[in-house]
Image 1 (cartoon, rainbow, N blue to C red):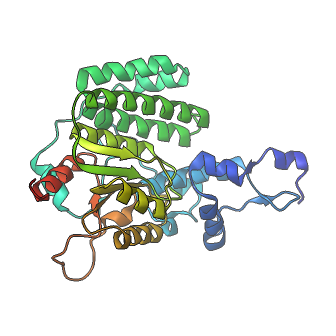
Image 2 (image 1 turned 180 degrees about the vertical axis):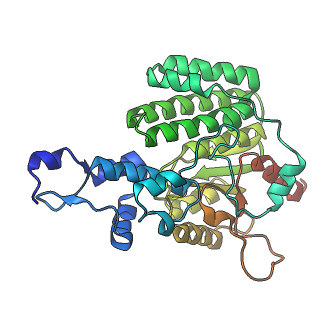
Image 3 (image 1 turned 60 degrees about the vertical axis):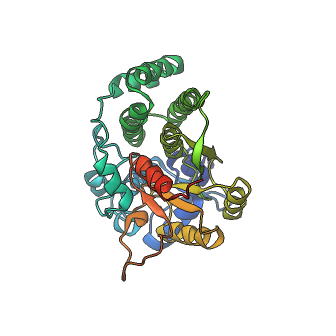
Length: 340
């Protein structure tokens, strides 16, 4: 059956799907070859085109990857099976800060457990979502600011924004939120956090460690990185954000030029685990031994227990499954740093 040009024009290009789902073009092509999904149509120039049903299924796949599922387990599943696996949003266990079940009890997590964070504050997520649906950026910003003044920056990020991220992600998957609305939300949060961090830093000298924050190429999601930066600022760290998708040679050059003590990287589950571990290994080889690498996010490969005997030397990278692990990591670094 041949589709008319009008029919094809109504479909989504591969670039559209990449922007909508965060799944890269390369990932979509690999899945097509390896798992037989997606199955795009082709226009007169041979370019891939995707219908709404495939876009919806890809959205759910992205959600499941963020929850820790592996592509080989879920990509070929039909939509009803994906729906059965899709985690329900939960304000008391936000996906952006929760560790995969298989995460090992790292030293940072043990230290964080000894310094138990305050109990989560219930955030008015339903109210915030309604303001977002009304496209009232000013009112949404004001509502976040009121929560910030009442509960502080740490609670806003950990209990408020993390829960809101879950709600926004679920609404986007369900088709109740448009891409531009998700972008509007991200812009509001980024502006608010930048302003809040500026107020925290005003008049207060920064202390070591100097932490360079970024993501590697193919990882365009930076909101989680900004949330981590907020926690570093609260610890008085000298945080330097490079934005997202920084090439590895540039990360190395920036770390050396800026005399960074730590390179902090954020990963979502969309990234291929092999690529993630290969990038971390390459950075470890090229950075001075004194520069630590901290890695956080939803990629399950970060938290797998290494095989073989334990070694006495420091790990290639320090996994930080939760935002609250950042304080423990900073404390560990400072305890181990040579005294001036």
